Image (cartoon, rainbow, N blue to C red):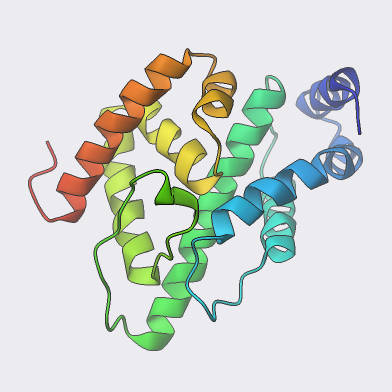
Length: 191
């Protein structure tokens, strides 16, 4: 397991423009990213082809293709990875839905503790992504809370650490975000 100092050093090198630092960083954070991807993919529908390894590798490619990564610290790196996971999973859902033409979709639920085990259909994921983008325009912190909790599968405590806020703030933001998303997904006015 890599030391926090080594990861921090590589993030600083990456921030300084050393693109090769990502190649040295990724093996050090690979297992943690796999665990987060595993949590994310637990709620996928049976028969979906995106797996943990593929998701982590797609995250790497997305980060490697990004223009200069101005990563502040480890938390910022994992928040960026969570956002990349969201984008990849949503893109995968779009492709799957385009193939199936979207039949049989049901409403998405964001209720814990089922959060990590309830299957989510591609149409649900796209509705969630649209609502989450709308939420992000109104309150970026609430949207980031959803990304970390729902897409990266972080606990309240892990989300609080990643966002540098208290667990109580995460719980409050999670409740607000869920209420907004439920309302937006159900087709109500999202304001």
